[in-house]
Structure formats: C-alpha cells, structure tokens
Amino acid sequence: MKLVLKNPENFVNQRINIFKKEVPCLDTAWHYHPEYELLYISKSSGIRFVGDNVSYFSPGELVLAGSYLPHLWRNDEAYYEKDGDLMVSTIVMKFKINFMGEGTFDNSEFVEIKNLLEQSNFGVSFNKSIGEELHDEIMEITNLSKGQQSISLLNILYKLSLCKDEDKSILSSTDM
Image 1 (cartoon, rainbow, N blue to C red):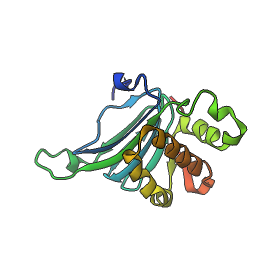
Image 2: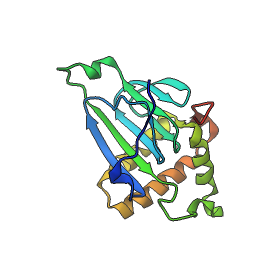
Image 3: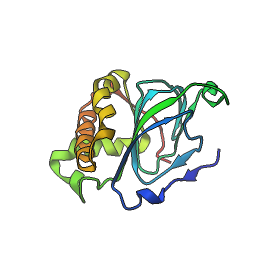
C-alpha cells in the first residue's frame, strides 16, 4: 500500500471538522494527516490498520488516531459489491491540537487529555462499552454549531482520558 498525506484544503483554516459519513464503503487509501482523528463506527465492519497494528473492526468501534499516524479502515468485501446494499455509517472528528486555543492542553487542568493525546500517537482503541456509553453524545455532535462541537469534543476527550487501562488498548508499537 502506498502511504498518502491527506491535507484537505477545506480544513486548512479550521481547527475542528466533525461530520457523519454514510457511504457504501470507506476510503481505501492508507493515509495520514496532521490532525488528530476520533472515529466512531456505528455501522461497518472490516480490517483496521493503525501504525503497525492490523485488527478486525465492527460497529461500536471508537479509535483515536494521533497526528501523522498512518491509518486505514478497509471494509469487508461485501461493502464493495457493485449492486450491494450495505452502507457504512461513521462519525469522524478531526481536530488540531489547538482546537480550544493555543497551549490549552499544557494547563494542569487538562493533563489527562494531554496524556491521552500523547498516547494517540500510537492509536488508542476503546472497549465497546465505552463506545456504547458515549454513543448518543457522539451521534448528536454533528447537529451542533462549531462552538458547541468544540465543547462537546472537549467533554468526550475528557471522558476518554479518564478511562481505565483495561478499557482501552494502545494499537501500534510505533508512531510512524
């Protein structure tokens, strides 16, 4: 697979980009980008590549991929059938480290989130129970204004930062 740098022009001047993706299949490009990405799979299955980790994914998956960490979610073959009726449904939350302002996560009150973002350099997968717990909040985030999305994302990251080690897994042994 060829590794592709994705830096969409429409995101260059934004600090946060949150959207719902309902498509027949996910992007098939092994890629990386400067933004962090929190991805919630509500409907889809296949093989996930994050750094040097390869794992199966299914509905309820919640993964935080760090800045410049190569990743790809490849659907099961049934999603690529020409006349197939399977659809993917995901919530994609891309954000820059400064989405709440310069140096926000350097403040002591955000040390937990800063630690989580550092862990995300290797990819962090959260147990299905965490995804279920946050499901409604994640599904609602696309309906909010940009300001409300920022606050909601901060709240989600804070909740994820408090997860116990047994509720999350570091995915890759390398951040490249």
